[in-house]
Image (tube, rainbow, N blue to C red; front, side):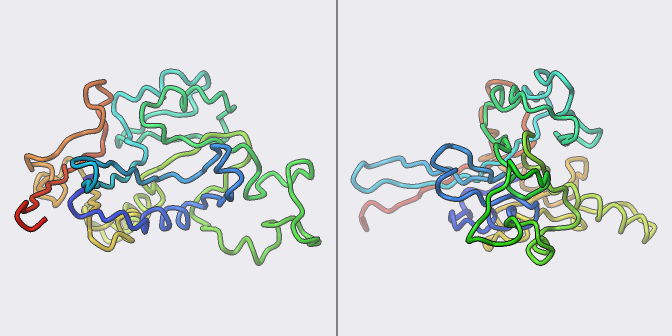
Length: 249
């Protein structure tokens, strides 16, 4: 993945798309205040330059899918592991909730399900009755129709994170197989890439030397976050360039 910080405006469309696509629960203000946020993608803001009139840069931050991932070697049950395609993937039904991986992640992008937000357990002790409804919120069929059937609904006590929209990758592979051809970069677009109004996010195959992704990776402004700790992240960023005419300001 490549993210152009010169194009990113911090609008948050990628966050909303990720929540809708991957059945990420909306936990509410109270839980966020307790640092129990569940969003797989966050947008960090950095200010630099003049104190009175600073420059700002927005940086979307999701799981970096590191090739040398510090989260994988601390999991006692191998719930987080590396796929043959380079994805850092989660096995939800194997996770026992030690949170060692979240503690060892330098990017702090892993989320722990403290409560049964999406009624995947349906244990009465874990559920909240809202407004005196007969059904626990989220358990009736009409409400559950909002969920994406292609993505697992996670239960309480497991870690979850960005998956690079693995369900979309699988859909692209099946489509190309049905059409009797190899997979192309244009066949797979993540939810955040699709929703980005400025086209700041590019997702593709690193092995495709003629693809759009590799063209952008050749830029001199590219960098990886915390590259010095050798996590070998799969997400590349293009540094923001500020060329402000001081005579105008």
